[in-house]
Structures are given as structure tokens and as C-alpha cells.
Image (cartoon, one colour):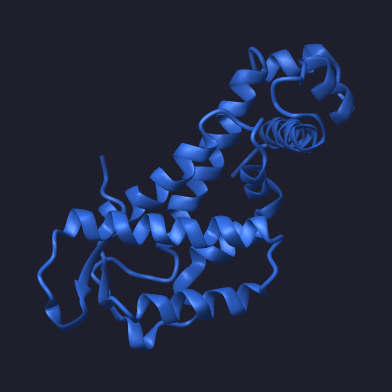
Length: 200
């Protein structure tokens, strides 16, 4: 269990991350200083430097934490070795979409050009990594395809849908969006088997 000092440390880091997100939306990443961050979060500079060397380290921690959470979210509905037919997919099957929606304050940062360094490339790359490492796909009618290409096609297509949903300010409800993704998945995926995250 976390002790009080650990909880306090995590809470402070969370406040600094939230301040960075707010400021990126207001003025763009490049224009932000450490002073801006601590003023916005109502801390002093010495507190900031206890946790981070500079704003770049804070930004890196924010990006890595959120994308690691994205990877973790995918497996929550499944157990390793579980096979799911796309005809049986339902809202809980797409916990990744729920994670993005629940953390939309962060994921909205893809709407901005002057945003976290690496976000526009690492976000879709993380989805590709999830598809590549955590799932085995079976095509409709077992059509033989280059599975590496298939996973790229599917992962980047899914990212495109996510990006459009975020850019539209989440016009469809989470439930409606998941229904659309399921319908599209059923056009080319027969089943998926969850492998799980491999222990390094």
C-alpha cells in the first residue's frame, strides 16, 4: 500500500501534469515555462524540481504514463488465450475506447499542432504495438494475407477513426462510437485471440 508521502508525491505530479495539459491547450507547448506550470498548479518552483528536471521530463512522463495506460487498458476485458468472434463483440470488448474517453482531457492534445513532442507518432504506434503484440487475428473466410500489413492497416484505420472522433469533440457518444467500430471490424476480422502482454 502507498504511504502518505508516496500519495502526496503522486498527487503533486498529477497536478503538474494537469497544469501542463491545460497550458498546452491555452498557449501551445513551446511557449510554456516551468514558472507557467507551477503558477497554474499553485506550487513553487522548488516543489517542481523535486519531481522533474525541466518541462521536457514532465512532458515525457505524462506521455509515457498515458500510453502505458492505453496498453494496459486493452487486456482488461480478456484473459490470455481467450478467443473472441467479432460477431460477439460488445461495448466491454473495447475498453481501449473507454480509456481514451475517460482520459479525453489528455487525448484532446492531438488536436493541437504545438503539443507534446512525439504524441502524433507515438499514439498510433502504441495502437500498432498493441495489435502486433497482444492479438492474433483471423480474417473473414480465413483469407490469406500478409498479417503484418493486415495489422498495420487495421491499427492505423482504428487510429484514424479515433482521431476523427476526438477532432469532432466526441460528437458520437462512447457507446455509438464503439458500435461503429464493431460494425467496421466485422467487415474484415472473423475473430481475435488475446495473447496478452508478454513479460520481458
